[in-house]
Length: 304
Image (cartoon, rainbow, N blue to C red):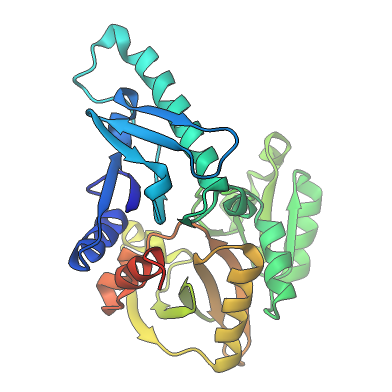
């Protein structure tokens, strides 16, 4: 049995479910919005012992051979009475915490184990690990000191800034308007990086399989190009053998059988690495390129 957990309509989860069903796999889908109505029991002395109940159906965790989790923390369904919503939300959090705990010790193939996904909470740590795999990384400063940020920007010429943590932020160039707000750094440290021109490449690592997608956009952050009225073009591409080997090395070092690695190919042929996403929204890239990423994930979950 393969256990899926998240929002049923979310494209990456739905894509993997469809790929599994095409193979005739037994699939149990745990809708996170209904977690408040579920029950979970775990045996403290076993990585397998335990069961998950949902709508009267029992999922024997010892029978789960693969698990793919993409929860977002959905609120209780609207059918829950307003007076009971706070209690329902607490119950959902408790079930989620217990299921995450199981995912760390289960003998099943888990994509990905929560403890190993935690490296994404520190972008500087990930950059150091990616550098250890042979990638170039941009000059970086993490600071809450406005004077240090100004000095770094002056030394680099062009600088971008973004979140230090796993919290998604929009990557942006440090222009005059942003520089005028640097005194606000005392409230929260920010990551500043040397701006390096080039072409972005997203690489999805799925076990030993690699799927590379080249992204061309004039936006500093192609994910939000449409908000600025700018275009984004995606196309499948082939990595040099050494770059492909570095990606596999990075995924293995991070303990992430499934990850999305963000690279940039510079005009002089260097390959920079920015980070590795431990729960990549692969469907955006697969839809544009036709890459069979969902099928590769299904194969990995089934033990391929």
